[in-house]
Length: 387
Image (cartoon, one colour):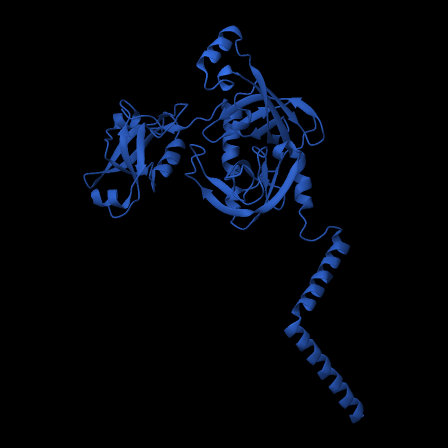
């Protein structure tokens, strides 16, 4: 009996030694075995390969459409004879340039079963005709409900039954590192799904739109993806793909999407009112640099310097002056000029509000009535020229 026990003990010791050596020098064998077992179990139990996002893609893809636009552009002879003014004049006088049709493409997302589609303003800007192709092959002519160039968003409408609408996600719950799936029509090849992660949040000062709060992702976004969907691992919409940073014209892992919270607010405003109405107080603001803060004897660079005041504008009527440091709008602390722009835009026109400024080192509260933000802004006065 003791002999059998001794043999058993020796066998166990040898086996443990073998396992120790394998784990020490060939740990990959044990790891791969564990993973393969997990993969096999998952496949048998659920019928879906692990780490697959087919469910999310299947859920979201029917809601993403391809958009084809047609616009007329002139074809002047000056482009044919750039260095010969006599030939240009001869051909322009005798053969007037004829407009040509220019085709472009993009993507969109069906957001309501009544046929409303969200896309980018730059996708349909200037288009004479807009055609939408659904994932099931149906084609429909779309009409523009409204646009908001300041966020680069537009709402279209088609008249087709049995539409698949996207499920809205919560952009305030999106975190860096989350899975991000981009769906669109890159280069016109057809509906395409790419995957990456959320690389950053709150990207602004890119010079793309007046109001910027982008989700950055490394999911491949290429020309034609504009207006398409950025969805999470569950297939819920978290953003509208709008731009890429690229030196080649193709994806280089830096893409930008408009958060779904912004897109939803703009969409609802356009559907309900035909436009997005924002507040405006008629000032030109700039960020405070450390040098400016020192000049104005400020403890930090929080706030926005009012470099210009529009004559007879809301701020001017309230008594604001160039050189004031705006530190609060409607009791909301202001961090910089972009923050000021966003806070003012959220105010309702004709509403009474207060702004707090620092003048000659002392705080001063001003009462004003908010005006409606004019259209066609180019630069800040909340992007207009000074007085």
